[in-house]
Amino acid sequence: MSIEYDNRIKINPKLAAALVIIIVCLTVFAAVFVLTMWVNVPVGNAVVMVDPLAGTISDPVLGPTWTTKAPWVEAVQITVAVDTLGMWGDGYDATADFPTVKSFSKDQLEMGIDIMMRWRLDPSKIKQLYENLPQKNWKNNVISSIAREQVRIVTKDFNTIETIEQRDYVAQTIRDAIWNKISSSAPLAGALTDFEFELRNIAYPETYTVAIENKLVAEQQKIQADFERQIVVIEATATAEKITIEAAANANATVIEANATKEAIELVLSAAGADPANQTRIAELYLVVQTLQQIAPDIDMLIMAPDGTPILLPSASG
Image (cartoon, rainbow, N blue to C red; front, top):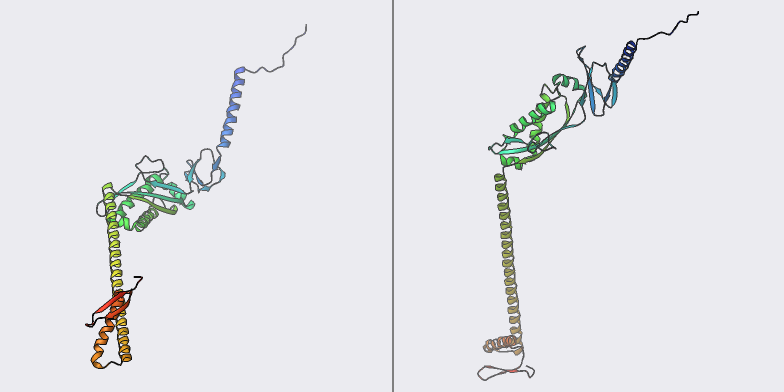
């Protein structure tokens, strides 16, 4: 009788399942370990590595790029592209970060100041900025607070009319005040650069706006009245000058006509050879004839009656 032996190794099913689980876990852990070592830094961003074991913060790495880290190290993304902060509206405007800044003028009139600010972060100051404000709340807490504070400080030095007439100067003053405070703010560590400021609007109470509009209308009406009065004066002056010129012309014409009549009479007297006793009578007759010609131009014949009365004989066509 022969005996056969089974040389195959028998594995416990429970042990086999445990080995499979271990291998899968190691594979997943290795994959996660490798994947967590890679960090994508997008364009316009910087990343700082926070190592809790070593207690260190790395210098920033600027995007666009990839970088590596240990799995326990936290990669903190920080925007270095142009950032903005807008203040306008009632707090529910989706295009604004904060509502309009309420402030008072020097003459205690409440105004609504709408502003927009833009800036970039200096990459060389990012590490210190993050150390000071690890919550990354420099925009919503620090910069916005500085902006509101400086707007109210500046506007109290201008009366309401000055904020209208000197708007550009008011805007520049607010801009300089905000920038000077931001630049000297310890938490911000001088990290902001390329700062820009816009004074979008200054809103006044409706009653004041209506009063200003009425004042402008009154001023325009006054200007129009002054203009119309000047036109009347100019026209009156022109009329007076015209009358003066016409009178002077008539006077000159009269003088010329008188001189011509005088010369004509002298010629008649000289041609008639009249003695001095008759010269006056001849001159009178000449003037009578000239006058009759002017008032009765259609008379062809003039007969003098014995008593000197002229008799006019009109022409047949007349």
